[in-house]
Image (cartoon, rainbow, N blue to C red; front, side, top):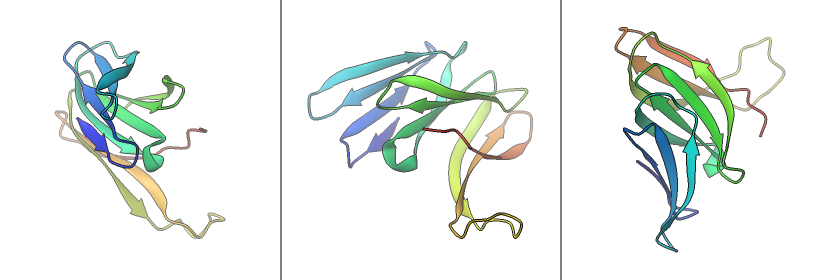
Amino acid sequence: MAFNPSEQLLVSAGGDAVAKIWDLTEKKCVATLQGHLQALVKVAWLNAGLQFVSASVDGVVKVWNVKKHSCLNTFEMHAEKIWSLDFCQVAPLEKEDQDEPITMMLTGGSDSCVKFWRDNTVM
């Protein structure tokens, strides 16, 4: 589970391969998001609560739009189960034309790999 305090939303991951968005003010499920083929093990908020990501035991990560309740992108990241998922800010490369830090997604899996990904998904 991951909590977004500014919106009073909670996103949950389940063994049924479904992510659910819960409105804690209304105390109800506002969206059931399907798209993964296997159980979800991790969820995390992204882009100030406008998106969240979900990771499954088959090594797939999906980026979801919270308002539209739709999948924006799918990453086949690992050959095996994803155990960890987080984000960090890094400085842009010299060749990039931007000054702001870049958000990178980090995943760690049963395949003994840690992978860094840059999400360029358009909201």
